[in-house]
Length: 300
Image (cartoon, rainbow, N blue to C red; front, side):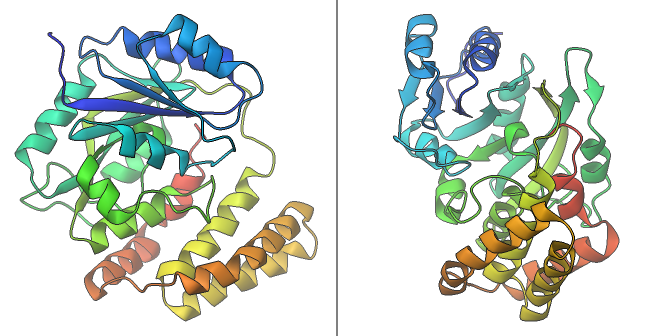
């Protein structure tokens, strides 16, 4: 396989220098030779200098503070290729996957983002999320190469750069944790297709287990996503459930406080989904609870 100039890989990181360097080693060895952009979210472990020394071909962006998921937006804006693949500091792409993804994006003009199959670890254990995405209740349509979805794992996605930017990228209110659903909603609201393509493969090699408090943060972001885009009764339901758990769960209590602090900004940015997208979101909620499944992925 020869180099493929169609796709840039954007990686966000924060204080995981050695893990990042290992992932960059694998990305740099890909036959596609993708341009690499690293967004260093205010690391204090010498990440930027280490990347410059070991991977001088990579562009390093340092916003000066930890932006969380929206750090990816900086990388996409800096990219000069039509497609952008995302990795985290503990993930990479299988050889040939980026070319396969670019071929699919070339052939399907409405495809805004594809969600890859996720292999976990060096042994390639399938992530449980693969089955959730493959059996999406939204089914297939003739102009997309796989089942339509309204959720994905950020480090296993390839996006059309123009579609990503039109949708606004990752929302700053959510920071990290289940941020993908809102982007999927916004892509669909602009008419772009989001689908699962299992023959495009990403590898996720997490270490250290699930971060403390992650489940509560994901519930905070699910509530904020509802306030930003979904009907008022659904937003209230998310908030009531979080408040009920906050009575006895310190992590839920902190998540509720964080959500309430962000709520005024969410209300100012509130924009209801088009009727067709809201109908699809309801269908997902009722049939597969995909948003919860994405958040509960064993690899995150």
